[in-house]
Length: 409
Image (cartoon, rainbow, N blue to C red):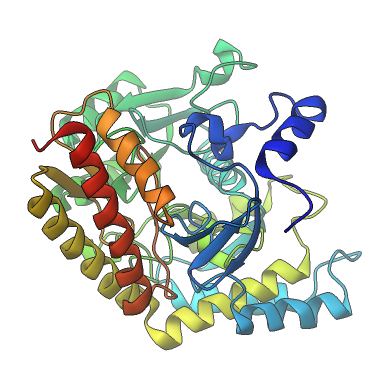
């Protein structure tokens, strides 16, 4: 149908791409059942290179938030592309997008733009170091903040010196954060924290209010910047910032993933006191100021604000979570569903090796539902009741297959 297949593309890629694929989209990391190449997306669906259709519960690992090929986002991007994208300077849309962020986010007095979440977290850390003259960053053990040498979970190609300025604490353990600050002996530039614990291979964990407020107080006491890494959770939980419901406002926030519904863009927003230090950075990229992605971001954020996107995704996530709970019980499985309902994950009891999770996820794929056995999933505003119900048909059939293979818990 397409003139190629997933298998043929893998064979060709192996000759011209190291390992055939790399990074978090490498299907070899996910299990033998996972396709590597995709050809199309529409709304809440994707089609792989073999023509198989899936209800997409990964949203391209987070970037899709108002549906694949959302007409309004695509129109905004196309209109800007027709005028020009990568020019000798940014387009007017950069100012418009920055104004939108400052208007929407209480902790934002200014915005700087780049392309990926890694760009944003690294840029935020640079601003904190420029502001404080210090070197150390406190980060939670196991937290993912990107793929630059200072934070990548893989050590290949890095040096010990590149990791020497991070000091770890335990998420939701304020005493351990205090101890980490003490260990850094007055040299803490920033405390970087995700709005909830979303480490791979582990059940997700909400931040406790006392922990969030305690980190804010700790940063104030030691004169460090509090940086919220909202790359993964941003735009799905609270458009004002994921810790706004706690009354905790960061000094800096890193944004990306869903910001432009799949178009490449990231941002750092910050408080006025850090405007001067941010201005001193030499931080740039050939494509960081491309106007098309900025137009897409502006349209995406406007849609989310007008439709109360987080509420729509919470509705979809609740429907999915309740349906999965009922299915697991009916098939005799004990499961845990953790994290926000709009950024969900499911794990099985007594499944330390993830054998059940891997088999169930593979069965879901065969039933036309794309989700993941060890990474959290994502929902979008395109996940209507109809799409969630279609996904639940597939997950129910997958539970039945798993029961046939394992029996009940």
